Length: 109
Image 1 (cartoon, rainbow, N blue to C red):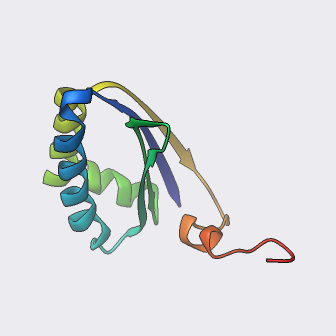
Image 2: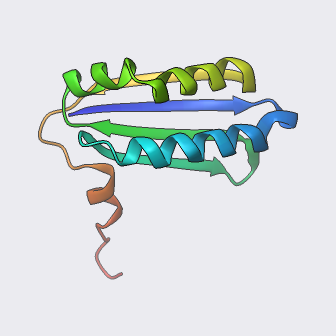
């Protein structure tokens, strides 16, 4: 499994356009066969800070996605609409997915 985290800082005047673009990309990408999860979050204290996380079944699946139109649009949006971006890539084996972790509960909840 491959996990990719994008930490973005949108230009304040471009935040809405970036969010609309990301939502459209998320909708198309989430439906791809090898996309395990696609999650976006805005920082409640800084609405221009956005974290986006994707999980893919394999490194090959992510490489295939990198060749897609959606990935090209995503990179273009980052370059035009973001003041800064950090990308973290992990190859994980036998770890729970983001969606599995979100369904776990702490004792007493």
